[in-house]
Amino acid sequence: MGTYIDFFAILATGALLYAINRRRKPSLPLPPGPKGLPLVGNLFQVPSKLEWMRYHEWSAELDTDILHVQIDTSFRYRLGDFWRKHRRLAQKSLQLTAVKQYRPHLAQATRKLLKRLLDDRNDSNLIPHLRQLTAETILSVAYGIQIQQENDPYIKISEDANQGAIIAAVPGRFLVDTIPILRYVPAWFPGASFKRKAREWSKMTRLMVEVPYADAKGRIVATLTIAFSEESGNSTASILRTSLQSIGAGGKDAFTEDVIRNTLAVLYGAGSDTTVASMTTCVLGLLEHPEVLKKAQAQIDGVVKPGHLPDLDDEPSLPYITAIAKEALRWRDVTPIAIPHALSTDDEYKGYRLPAGAIVIANAWAMLHDENVYANPFEFNPDRFIDPETGKIDYSRARDPLHACFGFGRRICPGRFMAFESLWLLIASLITAFDIEKAKEKVTLPSGEEVERTVELTHEYTAALIV
Image (cartoon, rainbow, N blue to C red):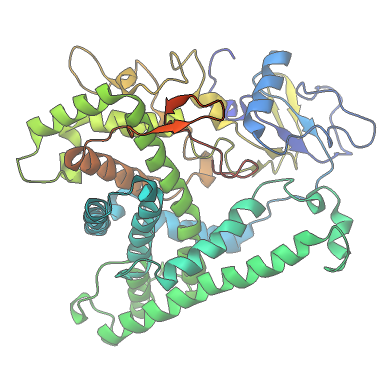
């Protein structure tokens, strides 16, 4: 694809979806793109699944690192000051220094996972156990809620709401995104299933926003004095507790309860499936490369005391675990097309005109699989980040995947620090406690031939942000 270029290389082989702009500047051309049809442009060419691969193919065919796809769309991002407040709360609560106070939550949830895996030897239950881990972590960090059982009602509410949000978040997922007049069609009308789905998803989302917040707030307030002082209760640290204390103290940076309630609900939706996907990817990588597992176990044995489990304070001494985590995030990135951005003003890139109102989508998958940056990009190889002489991390050998796997700019994932710490601690703990091997059982093909069972990573949401 050519040399990686900062800033607008977030558009690398991605799609530039834009509305027709009557105030175009004729002096500059639009970026290259597939030839469309009169009036509808590329409407019927936009892929509905594995979009990142098709965009990458178009870019290769046109020999460009930026392309445009022309459709008339009603999909817009008008966040305004209301949503800026939510983003600011999330960034403040999950910045690098703030997340350290939540490390006990991560450690507790990870230890509980190890116990469940030890008790349940059914390897097909791994992903449900990982979902339980992430749910426990996020709910405890956000609300201070301690999950005591599987099939917890808080988790059920959040899972149900999250499914619809993931699907609905993708531009062009429903025809109403490109034909705005369909919003006025009654829900019973044939083809208006999007309205019925939206109504159901709205109910589930409302429960996710209100129920955990109300329950957790009641318990926290009961342990605090009127002044909301730190000494007034024994509740565990949580974003909700800190935020309520700020309101009670009348701090200038205090947020309203609406902002707090909404932000906490979004944390689960944004972090649960992405974290599980990264964890699953890592396990698959270790299954396919037992030599990586053995090398990691040897490093842990040389650093962690016998009979102890690693913790996040050990991270500087365990660079190979860090390399495994980074490679898992790069190898099968869970958000191959990043969260869309919208241009507020006209811009220019490499002599191309980028019109105001254009929706900009970064092809993170293409960036993280650029063979000019990552040799043999489709291979799981943590050693690409390790200096063979020193055994330490060296990003001059291969670029740190964090430049692309958590998004870009002001919309970058605010939970990226906690997400990486969760992934790192899980990997270190699993490698310490267990051997990870392929099942030895065989399966019989329709032809009668017996082969070893294989494990493949499938795209669970082929038209969504998470795979």
